[in-house]
Image (cartoon, rainbow, N blue to C red; front, side, top):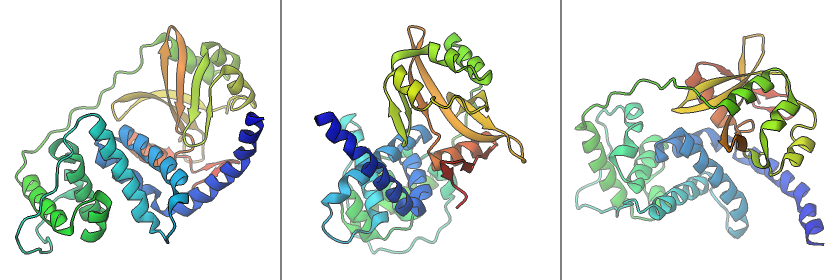
Amino acid sequence: MTEKLITNFYEPSRELHQKFDHVIGEFGEGLWSYCRYLTGSPWDGEDLYQETMLKVLGGLYQRWHPTNLKSYLYRIATNTWIDHCRREKRNVCSLLEEHAPTEEFTDHLDVAEALEELFQLFTPRQTAVFLLTEVFQFRADEVASIVKTTPGAVYATIRRMREKLKNRPRVFKAEKNTDYHKNEVIKAYLKAFNHGDMEGILALISDQVHYEAALGFIEVTKDEIRNGSMSHGLPGHKAKEFILWGKAVIVVLADSDKGPVVHDIQYQEVENNQIVYHRSYFFRKEFIIAASKELGLNPQLIKEPFINWES
């Protein structure tokens, strides 16, 4: 009885998710960038983005007043990250006011360069204040509400941060790592994928695998994969290994009239010579576009019949 009731929720939930995706579409790119620089990592930023979307979708029912959706999204992302940092015993810090007249900042600062260093130089709350104010153009009172402080503390924090950024020593970027996977199971997975050998891939997967395409679907057994995401076979594309933001990943490339385009990005975890975890970013527009840029490739914007990101 309980399983039948839960099953009855599936279709309405998916319809609600589609409507939600449409409503928040205009905020997705900015929010993803915010999560990336707030966490200091595209990978952690993507995780934060996904968690934020799930929390917002699951929490809007608690709002009884008209909601500024943009501010609400950034509030949930900020608080989720700060809570995570508190659990890890990181110094979140208090934001102190200072008795000095507030003023608009007119001095030059290379914000694009500074973004890469915020995570190393400042606490999570300071980083949030800087990003919200300097990059995403929230007003001081809006920022104060999001990070739970006062407008005076926002102005004071920005002033101190800008001074520190101007006087910081320059950091030289390390060369990109090009050490691909050495795992034999991953090599076998690539070979099977590129030969269209679905049974070969299934043979490499644990019966209790966690197989997900965030924020699209989750499958938790090999039978669910066989009867679900692989029920129509493999897509017929080619897969190659790349190093993306320091992580070895598999990039699935589709043919187009402009050359190969990024269809999907995946990574797997292997234990006891079996794939026990598979993650796909097929449905993640902001991630796929940012990753494609990093790899020097074009993203596939139309994935029939599921996705049209051109519109």
